[in-house]
Structure formats: C-alpha cells, structure tokens
Length: 224
Ligand code: AMP
Image (cartoon, rainbow, N blue to C red; front, side):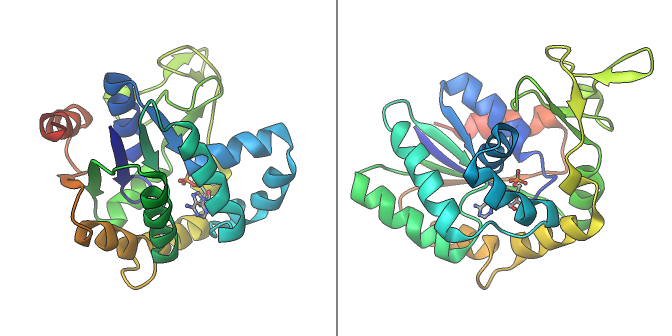
C-alpha cells in the first residue's frame, strides 16, 4: 500500500501518519525528518539544508527531489506513507513521473484540512522525541501530552528527551511554511490538486480540528 499524506504544519499529519504506518507496517517517509537526521549526523546534505529549514524556506529541489525519490525506491516492497513531499507542483510532477517509471501505484491520498490560524497555534506546542520521530508529543493535547518529571517534560511513549524544533518557535518561519502550503498556484495545495485530478488514488479528506482518535478512526475506515 502506498499513501501520500497532506496537511499543513500543525494539522496532526505526523501523528496520523505514525498510526497508519504502525497498523499497515509501512515505511513512514518524512522529508523533514530525513533532513533533520542529516543535520544531526553532520552530513554535507544536512549542512546544505539547515539554513533553509531554520528560516522556513523550502530546501532546493535539486537536493530534495533525488533524496526523497531514492528513499522511496528503497521502500518499494514494503509500501510507504510519504509525508512532507511533494510540497510544490514541480515536486508533484517529479513524483508522478518517478512513480510511473518505477511502476509504483499510488493507492491513497490523505488530506488533513485545517484552518491556517488553528494550525499556527498548534505548531508551537508540539515536541520532538530524541529517540523516535514517530512518538507524538504535544503540550496542549491530553491524548499525547508529555510526561512531567521534576518540572521537565519527557516523551509519553518512551520517556526520551524532548525538544522543540527551532522552526516551530519562530513565527516568521511558521508563516513562510504556511504560505507555501496554502498556495494553490505552485505550492502544496497545487500539488494536492494535481494528485486529486490524477485519477487512480482514492482521496481521503478529513477535518483536522477533530480529536486525534476520531480522525484516525475516520482515516482507517476509509483505508480499504
Ligand atoms: P517538516 O518537518 O515537514 O515541517 O519540514 C521541515 C523543513 O524541511 C521544511 O520547512 C523545509 O525547509 C524542509 N522540507 C521538508 N520537506 C521538503 C520538501 N518536500 N521540499 C523542500 N523542503 C522540504
């Protein structure tokens, strides 16, 4: 099963992606997380990408597209849930062409819809687990609230250390990322529409303002 996941930063896309990945045994491919791994490991790619990420800009296509397509081809057998890519019409066209060339089908497209202001408020409260990117933690949601020990917050799944992403605490960077997402001419909404118009994948659109459990139930019931 191959799935594309769309939703603005702060919509809960990563949280839902982790649930779907677990249930169907898919590879969860998150372009942003791949970049963060490279930055952590001090690779050349990570050093090139860091300034773009910190300021909320897109990492250039000549770096991003080959990186994601290569990861995808390694997951051909298992199936994948791709999150954070494509983020533009150009990336959507590149992905479509690569899938066709590799003979890979796109089975589902999940779109989490959320108002821009709500997404912005949510973004600042999420926390990243040092041990596993798929452990969702958010200070404002009871269902995924971190554990507090002696005034410090730890991952609710594994007790690992938590941090806030620098680009999640910078309002200008958040605005830039949302400008890119909601742009329906060349940005992510243009990529969403591109794949909606490409017959083939079943489209699952959900309202991201509902509770985490309700959203995942809705997604699961349609993933058939
Ligand atoms: P995310 O974790 O999805 O919020 O991504 C964090 C940052 O990584 C973004 O703000 C971009 O700087 C970069 N990034 C992630 N995915 C892409 C992509 N598909 N194209 C370009 N840059 C990306």
